[in-house]
Image (cartoon, rainbow, N blue to C red; front, side):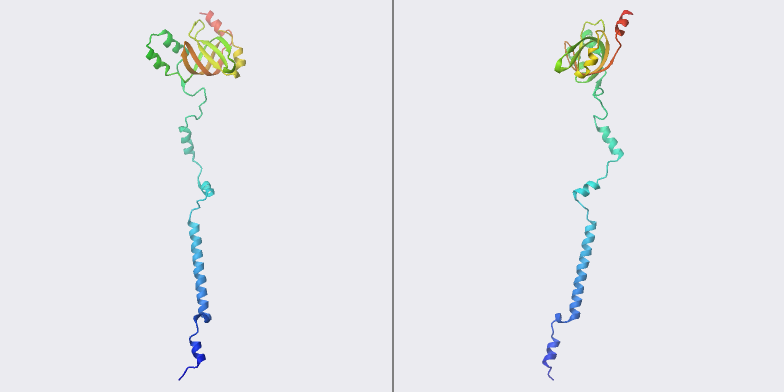
Length: 209
């Protein structure tokens, strides 16, 4: 029995002409796309954000312990100019060691290495005050009221002019300075005036001896 031509064409229709097949393929494609998109979003959520803004905000502030450790390591923390490397060598001690006691040159150099370039806090009696213009104001200081040398030359900034102009010979002062060198006398700079005894104190003390 022969199959009619129309029946044969219908039996061999392409799959795209079947609505059910097309619907299944389309649905499967949509499901695949949605699944891939969902997986991609999840991966993005788990990846770290390496942008500069996120890096700055993600860094936690230093703890109190870290801050205190850094403060302890810092060499300049809470040290003023008058406190840095303060030498215990006094004016009288240096004068006695260099000019009174008997020591070799190498022993004197070793002793001076303890003080050169460091700050000292010296007291003494005013011998003279000189205006050095741009270089500041120089005060000649003696270790004792009866001393004839050696002397210490203390260089002060012009900001101390008013206080230094009021000084009289023989008046006792205390100053913090940086020791520079020995050149016949002692040279000191970067001085800070710490205290001044009232006028007449040194004279009355000398007369009572």
